[in-house]
Image (cartoon, rainbow, N blue to C red):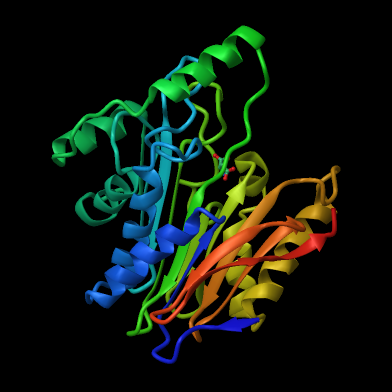
Length: 292
Ligand code: ASP
């Protein structure tokens, strides 16, 4: 179990590529931003990175060759949540999710409705499919492969005022069925925040995560007193017990609690996550349920 900096502010993100995202989040906090600003800024970095084949611009398209993205944000201070699913043509879906939370009476918008909302909110329409991703799609089409490996940027943060927030953003399973929605925009599955307890965000096969409401479970375990690492492991163990594949499902979760303790945990060994405080940003290997 690790503990954050003295002022209590800490940001944790999924995967090694989460390191630059955490850097942006810590910079946002240092400029006086809240945990909500921090998790939004963190997701931006992955969303606009054209070399990241799993998130936003540059992400793998669906089977029709169209990039459809899922994103969500949650704010512990008022238990606010917003999300978008199967959204096309917007560079920063996490910010559309934030607008859904702050500027609409809804929590979730999908597909064309989400795109129209984004346009009405002033978001520019862009092409998210890069030439490289198009080539990968063409190759996949020729070979008629399965859906591809994928990742999500999932971020949790606690700011110096004790506010908790979480975000996640992904282009989902590569070459997925058009309209397929993963766990990331599902509140309680891809992310969850209880402002009095803690926050969690997940990555891995969305279908597996959402069948177990994984992030809600992690926060519920923290609410009954478990530290973040044990709360994640307890959730993963439960999933492995219920699933016929046991622990052979690829899932990673990051979590932080109100005290600033944080953790990352994978079903299998080898889930790296990034964490940062004002003083230090590092990539750490998460704890795990199964060795291999
Ligand atoms: N959870 C995401 C999804 O299923 C992708 C991932 O994190 O691997 O859409």
